[in-house]
Image (tube, rainbow, N blue to C red; front, side, top):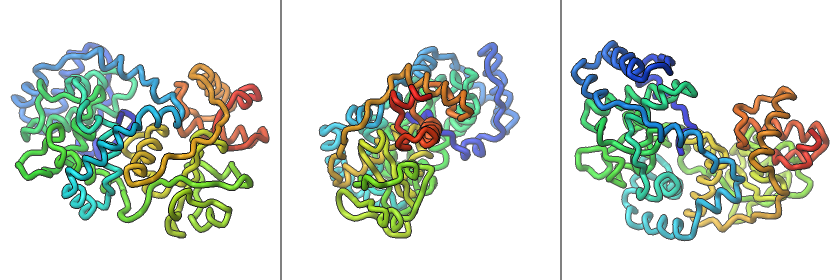
Length: 389
């Protein structure tokens, strides 16, 4: 699921990015070979690395069928979070208690955060993907949709191969090139891979301590702030200005408290923390306050519904109660969402790709049009909004 992330560190690790794509696959691979040799890699090593390269049409089919992200938060989170996953997560917390203690001490990342990623990415390591990683990266780099994302990962994989931590023929993982229990791209492993179990190898596929320690280190490098919350369910007053909600709008916790926002369970974070109010399905649905650490989730994955689900799941594993789903207005179908995005784009809004997914840019445009039309500006698109447009 980490397909949405673009790491600037990958660009630096892999050197200059040449966005050439398409054309003959063999010619494309030959160009990569020349680039690798020019970057200082031994020709014999490069030849061995690319010897088994071939395109994988399954990868392209997977890339083009990500309909799960069209689901709204309530449906998406209920699909991914089950009592069984919660129970297994808590069992894993006990099994690897010493590892999580070490992660919390060294990187400040709570165990619930990593357990949630571990569960959602690979079902605690049970489903890590069977795609040949090198061929997946080559296929997506050759494809011209976003070669700048995947091409640096090929040379990062070459560096892993040179140190004995990657096999062009045997290393497998997700269709987008992620490897291991918490699904890290080759550049992530180069920069943050840790031998957590002390066996002298970094094995994110077979060693939970290695995977968890590496994930914790990566989150810390992405900006995780130790000792601070990330997400919390809240109760909102009916008088709240809905146009001030959403991840683009921030106030201090003290300011939100003064406006009548309260925690549904426990206490809100420190008064001086900047925070946003998130209404994933509008002002009649669930409500959360998102703290600075919530932004780190978008460095892991850029899908709003995935990020919110992962962050909420982490709070459940840390003891939070099930959210109050409320009674949100019905949302739009995938086709209706595409129609809405087309209408918003025609009005000058940048909604990105017309894909039927309610992402951050579409939410921003929806909220602006709701405010213009005098509707509750809660960024949740409804049939009424579509008809008014």
